[in-house]
Length: 206
Image (cartoon, rainbow, N blue to C red; front, side, top):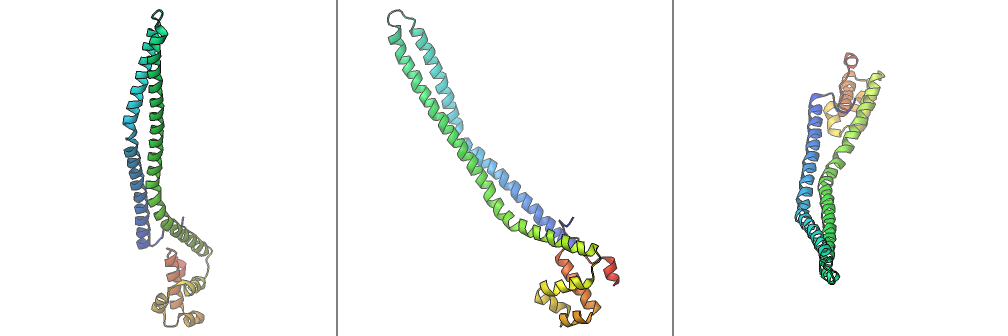
């Protein structure tokens, strides 16, 4: 499908890099979840305090209701209990707000711990993989269409580094113009190597 090179060494290198990128993502995903859980654990005592405040508030309200039944002075006896219950309700509300803030911070930091290192790696890795895929697919289409070796040789002259061309011929342009089969073959092979492909059997025969 053009995702990986058909040359063993290039294929092994690509697969290794892809596995490392995947492992990198999994590592930081786990790290993000750990950081999220660690920061989120700060909210545990706040939840307990909020639950205790809620229970006490309910108890004070129940006690106030009992006090209100005392003839003559019931309303006066109930008032301190209601005030205490109201104060505990306000404390519970404040604690719940803090719990929400802690959970949001934990989620945010957890995502940042995951996204920042993974995004940096993916920003370098993904464009290279996309370029290779497009190059390999395009080259394969030419091979499937039985394009002449000269096409790949010409591409090699335009794209290959000077030291690669020098290793093929002292004057690769002149040899290509003369149609030197050995030079054309080596130039085409160098270009297809860049796309992770091999010369098909029919081209070897040429």
